[in-house]
Structure formats: structure tokens, C-alpha cells
Length: 341
Image (tube, helix red, strand yellow):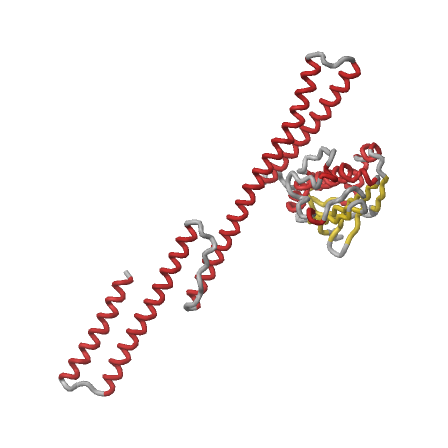
């Protein structure tokens, strides 16, 4: 099609020249006709030049798009044409950039999934192997006394509960990833639900000999969120603080507000999280450095589940840690005000 257009333009120039020659031979060529013929020929040449330039730029763009399709997502097209052409170039470059980001995210997701599967396999296999070992010992009457048998049974029960908890959290994370966990936003009293959950965890707090420092206002602190999500979020952060912060012997709960939000701060004085790892703490299967995770049986999914649930409820979560002084996990949700009628 492009060659036909060029041929037609050259044919047009030829016809103009022939017409000019005919007028000259018949002595009908005057200044006005000469100017008109010159303008027509010049305009045709300009049109051919513009068309050839546009065609070359279009070919370069096609080659760039083909390189992108072949996997070279670092390709970019230079904009040096007409405004409408440049707009098209900018749009294609933006599309390529988004494809590049998707490719990077896909690679990262694939690597994270492989790491997650490896961690999950290890975390399931370890307690399961232990359970099978103790059950075999009981079956083969290796335990010498009834007291030893009871101890074996208690260990099996403890490890079975841990295994169930891990499987439940994996199931919850899978549901969140598949967007199969329904959200039912409702007006919730943030202070009341925090007090209720704290009461539920009092036996565990006492068992770990933690001193409670509580600052929760008596008045209503209303937020709009899914109630079950808020329960899971607070529970996961409380479990994390008790599990990793019990060495500090203090557990703090503080609910405060700013102009737009209510903030719940849960803190401890345990080993904390190094600054270099604070960004990783909400990643799946993260357990921190050995000083914090040694001897603990956390699944590494609790905080990542909390983060995912908070994002679904338009809240925010953060951590601020100074090891053995104060490690604070904060969550915040927008305030709502009831309109009196």
C-alpha cells in the first residue's frame, strides 16, 4: 500500500511536469502558471518526504513492538514526530513499561512462591515427623512409665495443635490470595473489640508473666471495617507480641487518635526487629533473625495475613522497633462519625 501511494505521488509530479512542458511548447506558459506548477511540484515533494519519514518511524515502531513481544521489555521508542504520533509513542512506551513491571512482579512472585512452598514443606514435615515418632514410641511401648506416656501424649497434642494452626493460616492466606474471604463492612467500636480480645488473652498473658500496660479510652472509637477481619488482625499481632516479646516481661496496648484515624499500638520489650529487616516483617514465612525466632514456633504467616486483611479494610499497618527497648506494631483505620437525626 505504501509503495502505491509513492508511485501515485511521482505520477502526479510527472503529469504536472508534462503539462508544464506542453504549455511551454505551445507558448501558453506564463508567470502565474509557472508559479502554480512550481507550487504543485514542491507540495508533492514535501508530501512524499513527510510520508517517507512517517513510514520509516512507523516501521521502527513496529520493530520495537516486535522486540517487546519477543521478550525484550527494555525497548523504548523515541518520540520525534508530529504531536499525534508522539502521543501514540508515549502510550506504547507506557504499555511496555507496565508489561516490564508485570514481568518483574511475576518473577518475584514465582521466587516467593517457591520459597514459601519450601518453608511450608519444612514447617509441616518437622512437627509431623515428630508426631509420628512419638506415636510409634507409644505403639511400641518404648515409654517406660505411665508418666512418660502422658508426657509423650502431651507433646503429640501440642505439636498437632501447632500443625493445625499452621494449616489454618495457610488456608486463610490462600483464601485471601484468591479473594474468597468475603468482607462485610460494619460500624465497629474499636476500643470495645480491643478490650474483648484482651480479656480473652489474659490467661496466656498471665501464663507468660507479662505486665500489662493498657491505655484504652472508655468512650466509643468508631471505625468502618469487617468485624471478623479486625478480630484476626488484633489476635495475630497480640500472639506475635506475646510469643516474641515475653522476654521483656511487658505487654503494652494503647488506642489513640489523630485528626483522621484511630491507631492501635501493641508493643513489647523483646529482642525486637533490626532496622534492616523491618520491611520484611510482613512477608510470608518471615520469622526474623535467630535471636528473635530461636525457640519459637510461630508460623511466619500471622503478620502477612494481618497486613492483607488491613489492606482489604482500607487501613494501614507499620512496625517501629528498638531491640529490647520497645517494639511497636501499629494499625490504623479511618474514624467515622454518626450523624444525629
